Amino acid sequence: MASTRVIGLDIGTTAVRAAEVEFGSGGPAATPSPTLLRAGTVPLPPGAVRDGEAVDPGVVSHALKQLWSTAGFSSKDVVIGVGNQRVVVRELDLPWMPLSQLKASLPFQVQELLPVASSDALLDYYPTGESAGPEGRQVHGMLVAAQRDTVAANVLAVEGAGLRPVMVDLNAFALLRALARGDLAQRVVAFVDIGARVTNVVIADSGSPRLVRMLPSGGQNATDAVASAMSMAQPEADALKREIGLGFAPQAGYEAAAEAVMNATRILTESVRNTFVYYASNNPGRGIEAVVLTGGGAHLAGLGQFMSSSTRLPVLLGDPLSNFRFGKHVDRAALAGAEPLVALPVGLAYGVAA
Image (cartoon, rainbow, N blue to C red; front, top):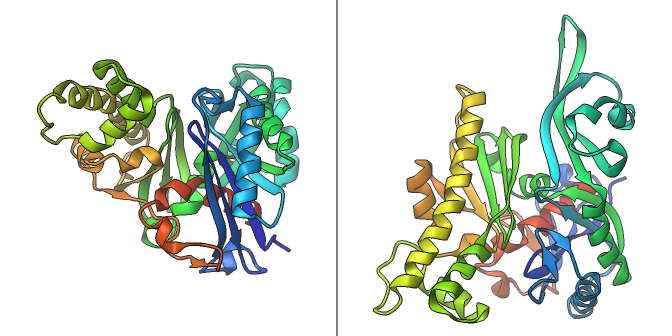
């Protein structure tokens, strides 16, 4: 029987975020309206997490202890995510066999596809379909290979807080589960989660992933650019970035800051657009129909319009809580406008309960 209560934990560059979700006994598929029981966020000091990896596990552990104390989560079992440049995700067709056997065979089948020895990587396989052809029955899916030390650093930080990681999932797949519902589950959609230093892009066709990319930039790059242009500290630069936004006429004296935000955002947007172009070249006739933004970087004023103009696609802000009910410990008003920030922890909770 599927778990009924699951806690998804997102270890980001600037904060740790967790969400406790309750499903019915049949899991997400049988629960059209899950319940968000608890949710919380605790900020991290600069440098504690770099490119999705905990480089100071002790500091991250302390933040996690604070998060559990203030949010009052009912369990110490958590699902954590992984997603940075040290994770390889690619389409792969394999001879059909039961999924458990297929996953067990991965180290022997994919070594030549990996930049490291298979013994130094954690391997998983996400099936998306199957077919029968001249070579027999085939499974179509996506190979996921994460370098062990990338995952180990975050697991160490989680265990240091007295928590128990019961599953490690790919952030891109969590994003897909959190958002690909209703109309979005029937179309070709690009889900783009803009974190501080890592942007996850997953393009899905009818709810099934077709392309995953982890881009090494995010909202913090624009903050850094403003801090450099204006010779100011990071907190002040971040506040100024949000005040200026993107594509608006700046106040006198802030022209350099506005240009810094524009240049940094243009670099990220071009990387996203290039990902879309690559997908289109390999999937003729199944073009992307919409872009859904989540993550802290998605809140930059004017970003949606800028990305829409750049990609020539409609862009909307994702809401992973649109079909949720809320428990008595959740302040719904406090979450208003912050829904895109909980997409990853909510999607991670969906994974172990599926």
